[in-house]
Image (cartoon, rainbow, N blue to C red; front, side, top):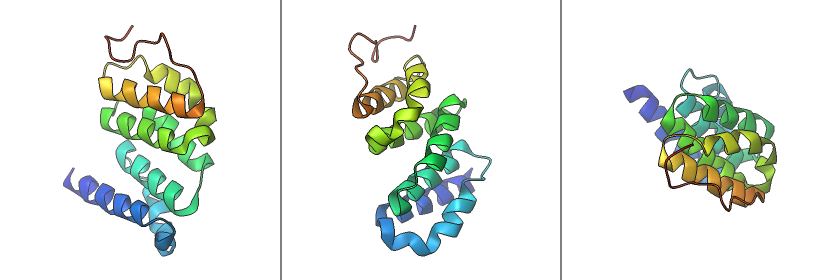
Length: 130
């Protein structure tokens, strides 16, 4: 929806500002309760960049990876890559994401696994899913 797009854009900008956006943490936290997985992931990204929060953000990302929302899956896998080794507990969801039909979800998941330290050699990422 148009409203979701506006909310995602605002959350993205807050995340870019990082710690300077601390005054907006209540609004960012409220956005985590959105019905939209994509809004939740944008809120998680802002929370990660503003406050360095990991546990809530990991939960949001795993739920997004398990959702049917491809856009949220892409963003969640990308955020987990940004988090690097701190995203270790999301490894099982990322491994499952390697079998998604969307090539960008698979590519972002493989990148996240590499940043976590998982060897993905031999796992088809750019070919058809198995």
